[in-house]
Image (cartoon, rainbow, N blue to C red; front, side, top):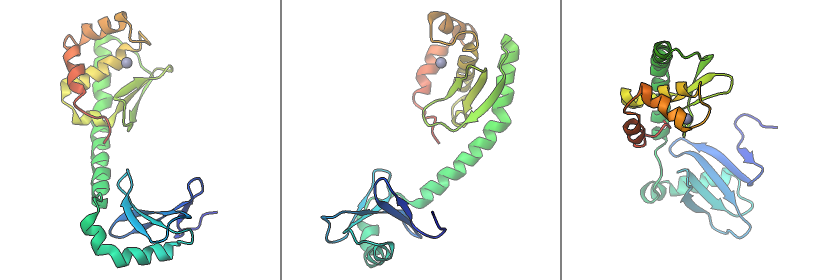
Length: 196
Ligand SMILES: [Zn+2]
């Protein structure tokens, strides 16, 4: 059972977390060998407090408050406001994508006679787009960050998957017929990341 306001216990790793007004989510790592609390930064940029087995959220907060200044000065922490800025950017991109991508997809589909069953706007970190076997096309909202010719290349690529489920020579020939510069567009797209 989880109660609001209580720390989340991560059963698998025995880690607890709490939210600090300055540092955001703080992870508590307990270990049998640990004696004095140690402060570090996790790979995801979160402040981590390693302490002995009996460490509680109450104790961890007390240690944190006592060392706040040193932590601020010495540890390479990510600013929680960076996360907030990212969330805000995501919202703006999602709104732009909603106002643009359905119409652009429809434009190219009509122009080249493709039928697709629907469009899903995705937030994936690694893919610009995909086409499901049911005919739904997914386009990443991150496409709103890339120049229009590259965005169009992704749309034409996914539309060509309606006729070719693979990346065969016939598939690429169809992409090339609609986007003669597709090779260059594909290469340029690598400079961008789909994640927001
Ligand atoms: Zn593909």
